[in-house]
Length: 408
Image (tube, rainbow, N blue to C red):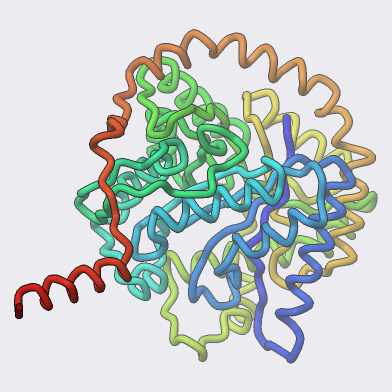
């Protein structure tokens, strides 16, 4: 099994001068440490206006900074918001490819749509259209990275003329594609479209097995790739705080994890938010003693964490991403926990990972071949059909000449 670290860039109130600066600089240090420790992925979200819960509105900038402080760790958009009102598909293609170039081919292209009204309303994305917009944008963005030139598109949610979208990524035809999944139905959709499932739901190994079984069964039987390549993978998120003393592990990580869930619920499920004024941390403190603690299996001693992760590995989960940055969790505690995990827990799961990957690739090869044969690719333009675009200056001169000739 592989491992990742996952960032929302949470910043509970009250906010003091320099807090956001420290938040981002600490995260960069943590990603650099994770790279040195041999952790596989660093995932960074894209969210807008979700105060306290996520101050990560420009993940491409953060991940680009990470790329220059690391050598091996994969840099994951977890996720890029794809409806065109958030990000024009051509701009996404350009940014993903550029990040792939500056990182020397280490990008994971996660996608999603959001279910937070602060984001959807702020960018004018209709709730009833967000899934359709995501699907159209993902397919066309993949075409832009893979095709030379992109033939152009007249769609339901965006249109653009023929252009060659440059630069092209290192990983051809495009970096591995993922989608955020918060429920079992989206897991099934990911399998049908041949993309990785980033499961942002805290499930136990028994439920995870159902999700994994659904995903790989559907992938084998029904997959029609939305991209130009498939990425059959499942990543589950997990709580995380490890210390040799169980009580200390809980003291260091449990409150931050509980705030993570509370702030998520505030913005997505039950909250009422006044921009710039609502204090989610204060509300959390008032409700703390009444809140259930679910999904905390990743918090404890190395032995407890090992048992927690074995449960996921045995169900066929490909990767577990740790939520270590939550609430007021302290930077030095996060670094200590990553160190302890890498020395005492991770080696067991890394020992046979290359063998597992090779066996999986061999097993899925015939199903991938069948899936790719079902895909209908966008038609390439013949050279004679690629339109000429006359420069604006020349057009102005030509129009002036025509006016002069007409007056004569």
